Image (tube, rainbow, N blue to C red; front, side):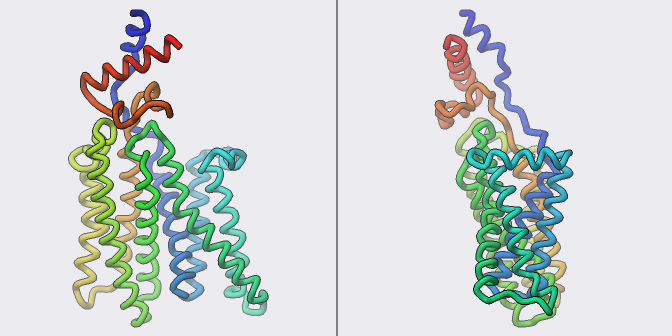
Length: 314
């Protein structure tokens, strides 16, 4: 009885996460867009200024991350847990990307300086691989968080990859808009990334709503709750529907299309972060079945009380 009374005293209510907001969303946006743009630069053989722009975006994102951390020392301490933390691995990927990308792009800036072709190709491969991991690792980091069921899914890295492709195509579309052949190809790429992002986001919301509990509460926050204006108006409206309409309208400057896509890509990350809802810590342990414990109502409370009471007895 004592254990049951103690279990009932725990707070079983869902709680929104409020630690991560605009700054972390800006980091995810800048790093994902920059890394995605570098991958597009490599795969499509785009002009060198786009590679430099990608490097600049990632550098700006690093400055935002230091600002979000509050102290550069905190960011550097995070690198000490490479074996266990995706955040530490991500910092390693960023450092390796910056070093290899700077060396690979140096001949584009300093015309008198050249590297052997094999060295240049190796540097580009290393930078490209690191850029891919920079796109993916935030998804792995967030998906590893069992206490927020809305993030705890292998779909999240795939969604962030799609958002990075959307941001990359938006940047490329705006920068190389003066090249007619490139515009035709980038228009198709922009349409494709927008449609894939919409489909994947819809599938993500559907899967999370079927999970129930905290995941369903996250979907409610986005669809009909406080985040609905940013989600429907910003992510879906400005970031997807409006660009598709502008691309179908002849004569519209593609720069405006790219700007709308970038707004949507940023707000999508912000909404994903702000929609995170915690489950009580007592049930966010690896040995418990989320499909059964992630519930609301009397059944959730009984199972939560039993799990907490068992933990107290042990």
